[in-house]
Image (cartoon, rainbow, N blue to C red; front, side, top):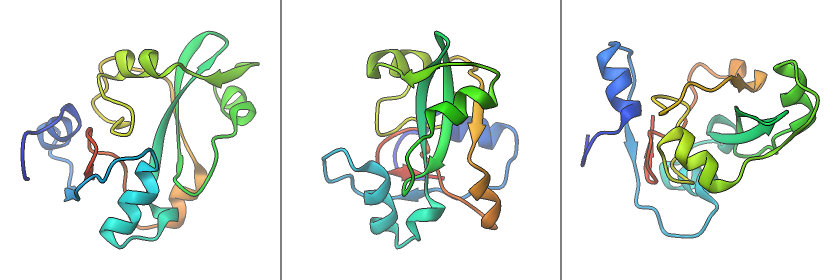
Length: 137
């Protein structure tokens, strides 16, 4: 792995989970997922983004393909809630320990309820942030 590890990569290594690290140079901007897919030559439907929402006031993680939009109503229903809205960036960063654009579903500072889009089952492997911009696992 190039550079310093992240809590996500430390968790995977510590649990002896088979994985691969894929790095690219982040070019700026906020289209992090599509940028990762293009830079790594991947089908964007295979690259997943980690989003933090508030469901009935509690932070919750939704993981969806970068080609999709998080369905807040479905996320709320999946965790037994009624109302959901996207969390403030600062709240998401504080709870996960990662910066926006590099939020990984793995190794987050706080354990949050997490819902993975069913389309992940369509692929033998999927990609998600490794805990910093420019790093996918």
